[in-house]
Length: 60
Image (cartoon, rainbow, N blue to C red; front, side):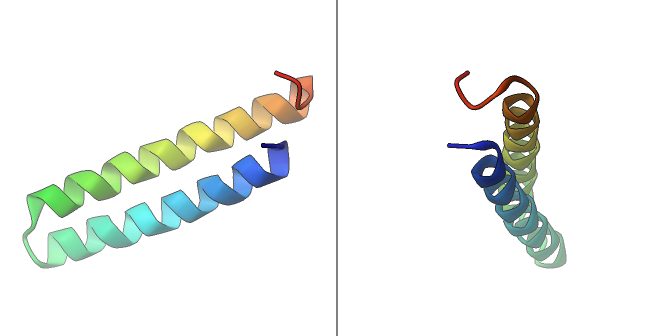
């Protein structure tokens, strides 16, 4: 994937994770909260990956 694709996927994971976390907190569902936090972390990692690709090129 290219830089742009990674960053779009990252944004999607961050939003979905945030929603899961909020619903989990509202329904007192610790598992859903944890899934949301993990998905947000995945989004952050994808964003970093996209930034690195942007700085170094898509061939990494």
